[in-house]
Amino acid sequence: MPDLPDGYRVPLPDARPVGLRRRRVEAGTELWRVEALRPEDWTWTGFPQPRYRFDSASGAFRTRYAAGTLVGAFRERYRLTGSVIPADHAAHYLVRLVAARHLRVLDLRTEKNLDILGVDDQINTGQHPDVWDTCHRLADAVKRWWPPPDALDALVYRPRTTPETSVNYAFFALDAFTTESWQLAERADVLVNLVLRHGFTVGWGLP
Image (cartoon, rainbow, N blue to C red; front, side, top):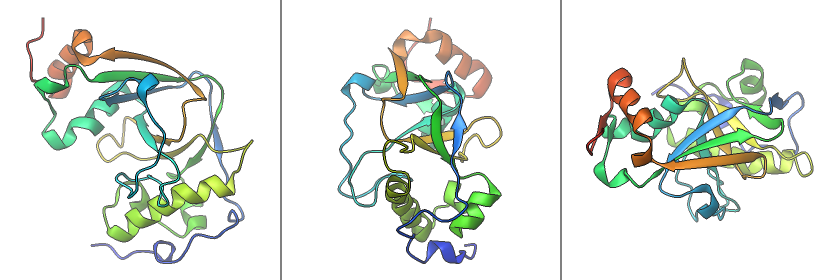
């Protein structure tokens, strides 16, 4: 297990660290997500205990996750199943989110931001419990570091499954996006491409 920088073992400050800067993601940028519910049925109540990388430590709000590419979304969702999409996921949804305005994000892939936070690239993909705890606390911290009306829309981080071809977003609300969704069974074109070009297996018959 790699040694951890000190930033993982100390509290995050109440005030935004000097030099920590957000950046802009252009309006019109597409994000993709695969999940069981349509966006109009999503809720934003936090989990009592965080489940995923940038879930709120306090449970004060819900974080959802999306990929910068369609293939990236499927690889993130189904990597642990061996790239098998189960038959009972035919009614799950492929969700396309489009930034309706410029997004305000904190990019955790940059050396400068990592240095200012006192962490390293493990914040993006590491599995150490102290790394996860820091990720959860960071989700709460960015809420106080950038309060409304300048609140962050998302954290941007490097994915474990598509580090060269995609990027992940941990986002906190839908107000900055327009959305479109399809049940997976309706998108045979997408599924056939995943099977033929990306090594996926689909658990139901495709045309």
